[in-house]
Length: 170
Image (tube, rainbow, N blue to C red; front, side):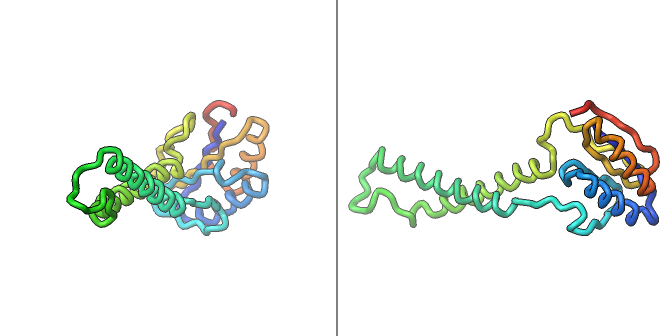
């Protein structure tokens, strides 16, 4: 189930930070809490810490695609040898552009897919982002039914209004 609590802008930033801190103290993980706003909201790094592995994924994707294309080109050139007039069948200089382009394609595709994963767009069963009015901040907490009371108390203590539950229990 999901609990949505709304905060009005103004002093809402401090109240949102207090709610996030209290939710964290009550045992809710950062992956269970989402913050939505129509306006930019700066949240300190340690409050809603979600480690990103984007750079590792991009480098891994680039290396993987590079190794695959080198293997593919090498296999192709040795499996179907052509008469090259004494030149080597497999030359890095002749195929360097192909290696470079496919390596960059691997980095780009991996980065795009990893972005979708980290943004939560590939998760099933997650409700869409709520329609947040201008001047409002919404905190959505994913919790089990037995945790919903604690989450609601945390949101109420921070000054949330219009607290609603939605979705099925997990």
